[in-house]
Length: 101
Image 1 (spheres, helix red, strand yellow):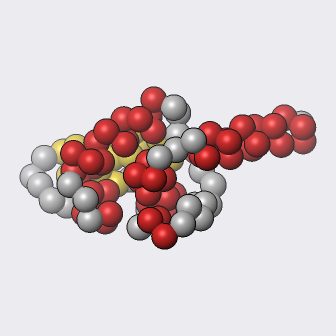
Image 2 (cartoon, one colour; image 1 turned 180 degrees about the vertical axis):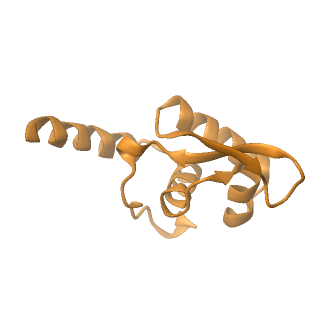
């Protein structure tokens, strides 16, 4: 069991090393604060929402981010999807340098 966990963690760290800077910023924010919508992520990172939606989609495609709940966004009157880190990979945010947010 320890070997499997060790291998999984090594693969996970390698995967995180392949992320772009904007993907890393979204990842680190969701590690710190789960259940954020695209607009809330954009506000926290001080970037346009269209810079966030693509990064969230990319992180979903590689299996790091998943839908959490649908709720009212703080910035609108619509019920929208919030996001979280996939629980099996929910680890402490990693230091990725000064652009971390």
